[in-house]
Structures are given as C-alpha cells and as structure tokens.
Length: 259
Image (cartoon, rainbow, N blue to C red; front, side, top):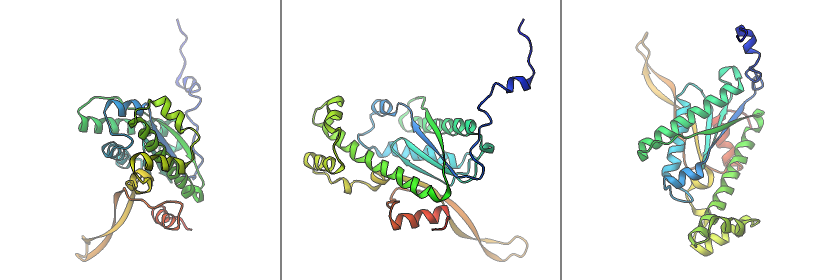
C-alpha cells in the first residue's frame, strides 16, 4: 500500500509553481503558433499573405482583452502575438500566465477558424514571458516590427520562387545569404512588385490597444449633462514605423510613458 502524503508534501513537488515575474516590472507574453505552416497549407490560405488568416489572428488576440487579462496592447504579425502587461495577472505566476494565455489564444483561434472555414482543428500556441524595463518597451516593439519586415520580404521572395516551379528546398537554398535589397530586386524582377508598396499590415503588423474618448452622459444625482471618459478597443492595420519620430509619438500616447 502506498503511504499517504498530506497536501503540503505534494505541493513541494510543484517546484516551478511559485516562479513569478519581477514585481512591478512590465513584461510581454510572446505567443507563436505551433505547426502553422501545415495549418495554412491544409486550409489553403493564400501565400505569402492571406487577409482572412490575419483577421483570425487579430480576432483571437482581441479575446484576450475581453477575458479578464487587462493587457495594455497586443502586436500581431504572421502567427506571432506580443501582449504587453504593465500589471501582472495571477499574482505574476509565470506557469499560470504562460499556460492560460496560450490556451486562451489557441481556443479563440480554433473557434474563429471553425466559424469561418467550418472545420474542426485543434490549434495550439506556445508562450514565453519577456520582462522588460519600461523605457525599453518601444525598442522591443520596434525590434518585433523589424522582424515583421524581414518576414515580409523573405516570404514574398520564397513564394515567388515557388510560383516559378522550384520546390521548397531549392527555393530556400537559393535565397540563403541574400541581402534585403537582393530580395527586393528578385521579387520586382520576377513579379514586377515593389515590396514597399504592399499593404501596410503585411509590412508593419497590426496593433490592438485602447483609445480614450468622451461620451455625454447624465449625472444621476444632479441631472446635469457631463462628459465621461470611456475607452474602446482599436485594431490598427495602418501602423507607422515604430522606430521613427512618428512611431514613437504614436506608441508613447498609447502606453502613456514620458519620452
């Protein structure tokens, strides 16, 4: 017979459960889709970009703002979502934040995919936490937006070669080591497409954030008309370059940190 153990003894085996994000430090939860290359092939999404796929990603990320998490913003491109928290949910417990945010995002994506494509697919995301000083938040977002741009030019170049009849291995080998300008030239030569003129959301990603506005209401005690501050969730598909004066001003206004 297995000897009994009380609850406190069992809890000692949960060695990672009390690891927390540093107190009073902002952090991002970065989520990436698992096996999304296979998913996009099976669902026949357009390559290299499909507006409907992007809409599903944004819709799934919006659910995080309605699920009691209270993030400051979410930056989305490809199958990546970066969620900024200025205050930690779940008392800052990393295991809980990672597991719940990733599972919530996967469930929301699966439901939206089912609604649009009428298919039952189990979708999963991984999640990691990046604690970051407040003064580095803008640099982090600029870094991820630069990755969005790299992904953009690489994807267009890769699928340009696929359209020419190359297989995936040969296309990847041909592109290996090419600089950005060379990728631009390849796409322009083969398709006549200027990558600087593609839709903004493909080049710069999509941002979800709250925007304040005034709404007229009535004071229930005095009956006077007053202006009340409200906020609405905005999805912005036409972003500035974050690493620019315009982009910095735009982000400072959202995050409300001093320049």
